[in-house]
Length: 297
Image 1 (cartoon, rainbow, N blue to C red):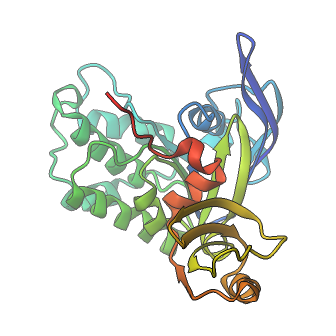
Image 2: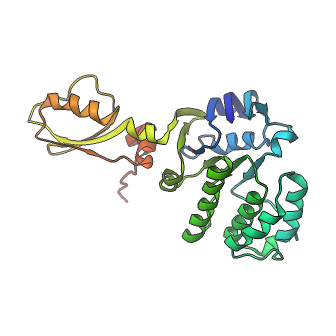
Image 3: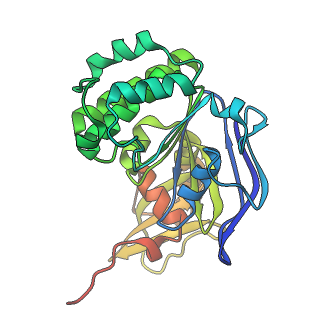
């Protein structure tokens, strides 16, 4: 559904995107993650048709996005900072969205009112940031888009409303086949909703896989080895720490194969631990370089 191929974009000599490739299947919830400055917002603005690429292609459903109204009619974008006309009410913005999106469903707009503690007559300018986000989701879901692109979508929402918004989005994914691409620093939340994940750094894609496959192919193992015993050769170790005889390893590979290999070292003790998306993110980016550092003040 969404394809980004060999995408390059620079600003005043700074290479923001450096041959980026992204592939998002139809009906997927795709989490785009990376450190600050990785290029996430830049690629999202390409997907929304705001930026024109220096080279490469950005397509949705096989059609280029930039200056293509036919694609943009099927695409909805919620940025971190919500746009609205000065003095406009939620209903005024509803009329604007209805004029821009042929599939806008006024009946759905009225039904979705029950999900948000807002009134259509409220001024957008007088709403808090969290309430503006609620209004943006209300309007976006009423557009019935095929693709939704989200940049820090639930920032500013309380826990109950976050759950409400994700529930509505996932319902559209299940019932309408909507494709969702979301960029967020809340990796714990993405882990609950995404089925595909792409990890960016330095304008490139480091790793892009289904989340389940990513978790199956990165393993955390604790073990204690006899004194002087070395680890088997050929292991792809992303990170290693040791306290006394207890070692903790982050390894690339499948748990069954790795534990079988590590048995060669005759460990006194060995345990496989679950690995979170946040841990995968840290160790794929280089482990210790991205861990929290103890600073003596």
